[in-house]
Each structure stands twice: as structure tokens, then as C-alpha cells.
Amino acid sequence: MTAPDGRQHADSDEARRIAAEYQAVLKAGEGTIELGRTVLCDACSTDLTDDPRSSGYMFGSYAYGPCCASERLATIQGYGEEWNIRAWCPPELSFADWIRAIRGPNAVIRVTPGMPRRGQS
Image 1: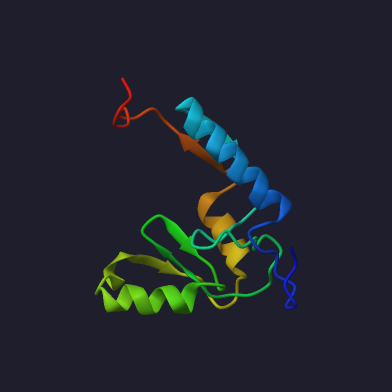
Image 2: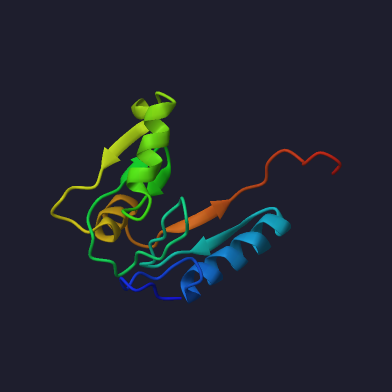
């Protein structure tokens, strides 16, 4: 769905594909999801792949885009967790270009086997 400002929200084709593949990989217990050039906000799954806006930051391993950066920052500051902000998007780059530069080409989400969930053996 396209918002009035042109942003692609969480129900974009790519966001749906990644969400479906992620659920399948979790069910299987391991696997890989290819991201290509797709960039989604880790807070709301807004598709920022072609969004020209700058802003956002890395909070731990999560990429918070310009769609959620201000709101999430207030919460982060409320908990005194600013020290977990690893990097800020430079103003001369779009958030998507910045994230692609950080993760490099051929980015994937890799799910590896872990401890069994409660009730599983």
C-alpha cells in the first residue's frame, strides 16, 4: 500500500515476501532469506528501498528508519539506552543507501538452529 507521501508500507510485495519466508524459515528451524537491495525499517517494516529520505540509526542490530526514528528515540532516551545507538545515518545519504553500504552486497537473513522451544524436544 502506498501512503500519500509515497512511502511503501509493511504490506509492500517485498515486505510480504520477506515476512512469509521468515515464517517458513522459523518453522523449518534454519534457512536463509535473500534481501537483495530491499531495505525495511526494523521497527514497522515500512519498505524504504527507494525512499530518498535521510535519517535513522542503528540501535543494536536493528535499523530504525526515518519513519520511526523520532518516536523510537524518545522511548530509547526514556529508558536511558542511548548507548545502544551504534551509528546514525549521515545526512548526505538516504537511509536505504546507508543500510546497503553497511550490510554490503548479497545481504541475507540467516536463521540458525538454536535451543528447542518450550514443549519441543
